[in-house]
Image 1 (tube, rainbow, N blue to C red):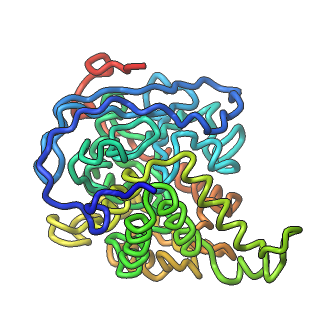
Image 2 (image 1 turned 120 degrees about the vertical axis):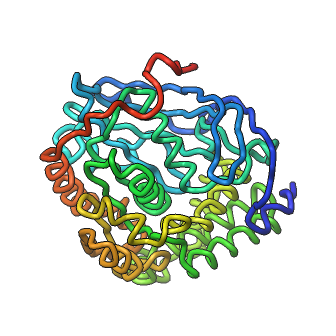
Length: 381
């Protein structure tokens, strides 16, 4: 059994290295999704000289992204979807019912952009088990900045909507605070404005599981722990109770085992640790004069979605930041808890559709995208 670097036992801080890593391939065991009925761009773009919020300079950052649908002539129909901790660029697959023809996000009229976050292992630059120091410590603020740079490269000044849940919600809030003049609408689902004590505690347990169990058994155990924070006791009781399989084992245990093994087959352990480190240092108000100063300028275009019964990020922590900055707050009832933002697709689609409609009525900023023209940084296949 392999052992991870000691850095994963505690959040990584203070590294002063220059990263240079080419895009990692999509895991060979991953299921190939069916070809959609709309235009798709699945590419990797390279950015040079990226400066992280902590001051580290990264010579090269590769970003794997997927664009479903076509960007219109006005470049005002792009929806930036930000994935959660172990999500991929295939947003139309993991958010079925929210994305699809005739859905709230419709690739036949919208251009749905989803990029693998900085630090991920779905084709973007990040640390790996074989090279844990490939990227200095990064934050959700850095992840948002890289997404803004991707929009610049695509010639998009202001996306129609920015949205995401959990880690994706954290990055959505950071995008809104960092680039308020680029936001026409933003929806943050099941995510706090600053990492909570509960979130820190869950991540500490997962980090310890990885340190003790290594990059296979440890990651599988971390995923099992995570799944218990994503679901509610009631949802597990209703689904499994004390039911047993044909082999005599409890079905809930086998469900946890299966989730652990599936993640091990497609995810890098060190990337996982670095991503939860980024979640732990998440704090939108840090260095901006507090929460109200950070999100106040975009509050009229921001929606916070809280899920009652969420064990990871209770609805109260979402409602508190939304009320503090006078943003719209929406409650999302769900038996499932935290995973409700992925599973309650009909209710989520309604919230997203309302945000899209409101955003469509807002004027697109006239300034040019801050950075480069699309031809300045070309995709590298």
